[in-house]
Length: 313
Ligand SMILES: [Zn+2]
Image 1 (cartoon, rainbow, N blue to C red):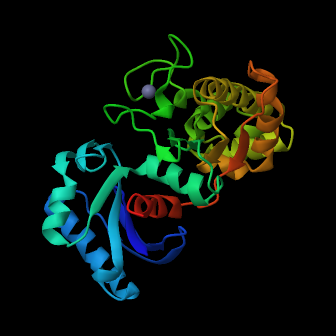
Image 2: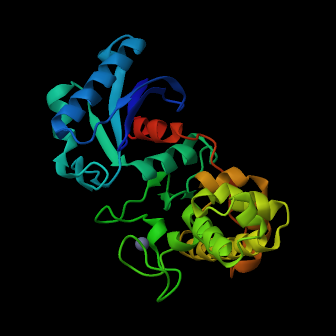
């Protein structure tokens, strides 16, 4: 049994042939060119599907096509309600694809399907419940409950980056103040690093970035914290405090079997995992109960493709 999953990004269409175990057997890719009319992009989605199906012996061998879309998706109707990256609104993707392909078509939010893939066959390996946190430019991810993506009644649930951590806090791109991602994304580390540079240009951060705020990356801050630099350590400790505070709320709401941590900050590896694993159990209220595991995501960029395919498997 095979399905095809396509991660429809603002830059690329990344497609893969996936078997029922979640193994990615082969992949194909083409640029999205999102400025085109959506029909042209969907023609390319269909062409990639046909191209990959040939590897499995033809479209008859394919159970379904699954699409991961960068926006709010009505999963029951197969409708993309809106996607800022693509500039699309109210596109009936399921119907459009059925005009092009003789296959059942399923669609979901891209971050949510990546969480599904990690829960089923990545870091979670078959857990029933998981919360994935993708610590990147913002915080993406998803909530998996009873083995399924939790989307909410209006498909805007699971927006983990935007629960409010700090009242009257930092202004978020979403227009609200104090969102989790303003404090615990890679961007939060970068902005704190730049602030440290401007306050102390001759410090380790300033020297490593040659005085250029544009050179301050999350990786640089993490590396200097790892080396024990005082300014970088203070930034990293504040970062961990906010991340853990958010995770405590997520435990109280969902009590997942596992937290799966992905995104750029996850590259810190054990330097990130160890304090999370040590401190989270001390911060939650129900200390007598078993605790959520905390793991790094294992599927990388393939999670979006595999999770999209899993919608149809
Ligand atoms: Zn927000």
